[in-house]
Image (cartoon, rainbow, N blue to C red):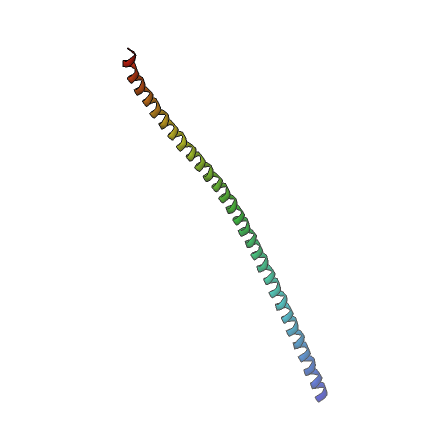
Amino acid sequence: MELADCEARTDALIDKLGLVERNAEEKYQHDIQDLRDKLQLELEAKNKLQDAVKNAQHESMVNKMKYEEQLRDSSTTRHIDMFKQKLMKLRKENEDLKRQLLPTRQ
């Protein structure tokens, strides 16, 4: 009867070991799937951030171009105003000179 008891205990231990192995394998597979899911989420977040960076860079470039255009327009406007002032000054000087010449012609 001792041999039968040993065989029964051995069978019981083998069954328990099989159960532990299956549980460990299931946990391992579950952990692997969790890591895959987390990796997928991180990749999606990374892609979204890369898109956001691309959009920000594009917007920054567009804004820079607009600013440079405004700067050129502003510079052009200043030059135009400066030339207008010079023109007005020259006209005034010409008018003054004409007035000075009128008495001498008469």
